[in-house]
Image (cartoon, rainbow, N blue to C red):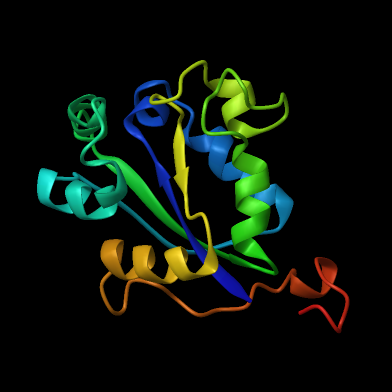
Length: 153
């Protein structure tokens, strides 16, 4: 089973959307194997968004991501990276399809509710960046036989 990182951004925290977002992931069948609230700092954000530091909007991104604490999640499931990306929708909320998290809750490219790892390789790096050893748990929910066929689990 794959693991992927999701960050519930300050826009999700401030707007009271945490419960609805968590519910969507759990109803889909993804397992929360790590979750914590943390305050991000500039050093961590510069590392995480290294590909964006030279962009004109980067100072806005920094301010936005440090406005409140965030909630970081490690979600586990079959094809978790792809499934979560489909669930979150296009980066710009105005372009995200209805039914996706961003499509239902965002009108912005920056204040777009969640970050989700874009690839399995990125997920591995990002999970190490946001979770220390011992903060991600390896457990199998009792509901697993009701989520997957025997050859999928």
